[in-house]
Length: 230
Length: 333
Figure 1 (cartoon, rainbow over the protein chains, first blue to last red):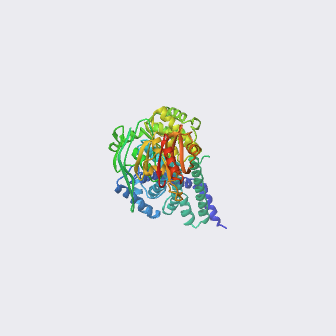
Figure 2 (spheres, each protein chain N blue to C red):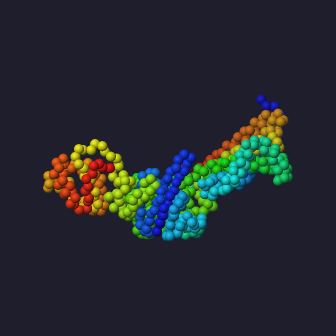
Figure 3 (cartoon, rainbow over the protein chains, first blue to last red):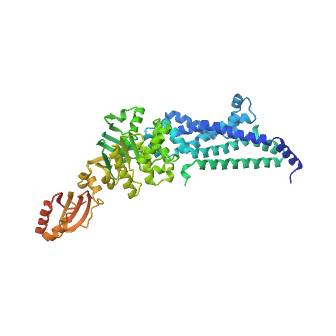
């Protein structure tokens, strides 16, 4: 069914490079997700509390700028963004190809997405609870730290997993333009060298990884949610 | 003392203006249980939210022990709010915290050390008679239990005032009574002033000493509960106190007399005395009386006999009785 050369190449990859590919994929997924959260979480919270009737109203102009930046970055297709920020990657990481270089575009692509997810989750915190905290004399910072984030925690964990899977997808895409990981394996070794077996193997691994992320995420999110205890 | 001076608040939307509060003046004294009653849409919730400035009035002043809340800085307002706790119809507990952690919340805000906070929280849960639910999450508690946790949380900052915004409206009658008894106990034992916003007369009856009737954003009348409920002076008060407030159009042909009970002995059988001693038969058209202590309060509308002299004698007899007033009316509300 497959060319014997297919099998040979796959064997070779499994023996020498597979662990590295998986490791690169994990790094390219996890690190940008964390960076995207470091930027996106405060931004998403700001989008809610900074509103006119929020607990920490910000000047309308500031809110407008945040919204515009997020929307612009969100509307740029990832592959284009990747090319556009290549000089930036080179400036920060010293190179524009490889796993490390991909961290920059992946983080930039993901933080606006994270900000929107976080915004939605924070908005879902019952306003009555916020009001109760206000009536107890809580400051805006205390409400963010002690009410909004803890009450939204299960949703935020779910957000983290969704972001991770999205970034995982982008990361695989980056294999086309010199990113590392399983995407690289599928595109460079499988597709470009006409070795479909290698491509399929990479695809199966990618699917497996997503399933693992997903089930870990679901379990953690559920476990952390005290509203579901019976 | 809480003093509200000429509070007004208007909500504006694109096509409508709602005057939620219209020149509200009220004084709530230290240590009393004050009721604010009104039908939905009367402006009660806006009013209570103005007391701790969750809602900013358009004009007027809220004075807490003589200090104007609206003139305070954000920090001063936060510390004033700590002396003025609030409980809500929807409880508004932190869902991701246990009962004990919920009670700890205001203590954390005040910077109390964790151990001390937990000790204090345990005491408070005992005070609200819920010591065994410390580790339970809100989702595991019944409505009454949630409100007890909310009350314990509200008390954690040692407030002088407890504002209750429809605090029992989501509870069944039995639980309502128990929560009201608890509020009464806290008022008695801790001396905390309680302000109760409600649409239910029985809530006011059960624990309030004074009441204000709110309608269309205005205070229609205020006074001791026994006076206001037995003989409401305002139209809004009558609508609230008298049954349904609807005019019934199947008026009998004869004359009507309205009796207002304000403290007549509950055991005196007026109607049967008239029938037996005077031989005068009266129709009871409507009645809404209630006993507070040994006394009767409320209203009764009687149909007088067609015979003019009998009617006159009945009127004479009724007007002579103590603890009630009788007036002839042409229709009744």
